[in-house]
Length: 515
Image (cartoon, rainbow, N blue to C red; front, side, top):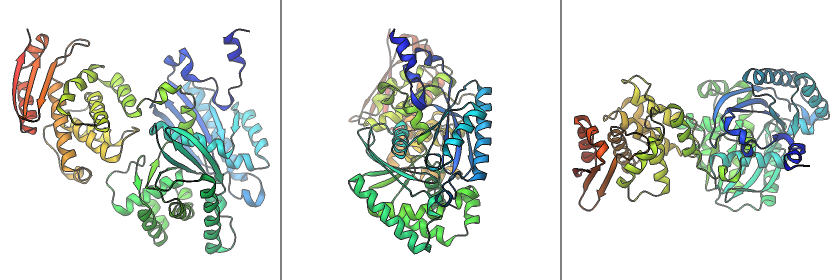
């Protein structure tokens, strides 16, 4: 038997043959996964076999498969009908997109229900989709890997809440460690008898047991995965009047979570739901989920709490990546993809980065990656109307599906790109976002944007560098040395932009030409 034949006979389980080890993956355009949870059923289609793929399609149906499971031992009959209908639709969509068969996994409700095997057989018979049921520890592992898709090399604990269960997983040096599962999903908590006092005691007992099993080190980061956590974070944003409603990488503290719990308890849920854009079915679970979160942070005492929009579905994609791809920076990979797809001169971003980098001699690796991201994205919005190009670039940077960016970094990146297209800084709706930056961050973004604005004037063919720029912080002097081929490019507009850059740096400058 040849190696290839042996490989073909391996049962790869729910994930299929590893896509990223296959030479044909370079031609792969889309990957579709289905997550059959206790509360919702979702299809996500990732656009491209890349380190930081875009979401080509994302659809969720709230089915509540796990409702009443503790009492009946069976799947919610109405939810079962809705889930089958949703999966049937997803299978048809996959056929239309040319991505069948879909990878599909089911979690707590299907694995615990006595009619779970019958439901799986019905799904396969009706749709051709094989539904893989994973246990709680595997669910925790995949969710943690989803977090690693956005935060490679992370340390902390991942907490994934679903409808019928809640999982915890340790992350250390970018690897998933100990994992535990618990019955703390809000659908299960609905069925606890004895009123609010008994419910709180029930939550307290289980979380104390989880803390003992995890041997948790106080002061680590807590990553929150799951729709109920995201809904709480959205309410926290509403309560605070937070200006950027991107949930991924949103940070909370134990004190703020306590304040938001009181805010939820004192609010009209229908009014709050409407203001926050949360569905009725999700909002009904929030008061239960926030009780769990309050006790979780009280016992575990994390240094901070970070919301992750990446979870089990992204973990399923991460599962198929070779280590070399996993370790790449998701922000830079996403920006490279955007440049290759939308820029007028793909590849110039790398030359531009080498050109402007000397202006930031004290930048650490975190600041350098923002600078590199800006260079890669500097030209991807060129199709926008010139009057709105600066604003659109800012909106794209701050609201795009980019991993590995703190909210303040999103704003700083957006401001630099805005300055790439306009020397003016607009106020109005942008002022609350700019308030997230320190004066030093504002100035660095301004300098970077002006450097991009100047550097964009120096396009040359292929990989030819346009020249070099040197910065003496001591004498506050810029020296631009242009390659012979770039000399004709240094016209009146380019000179004006270089002057603006020097003014932003409070510097003098000179221009030299080679050849």
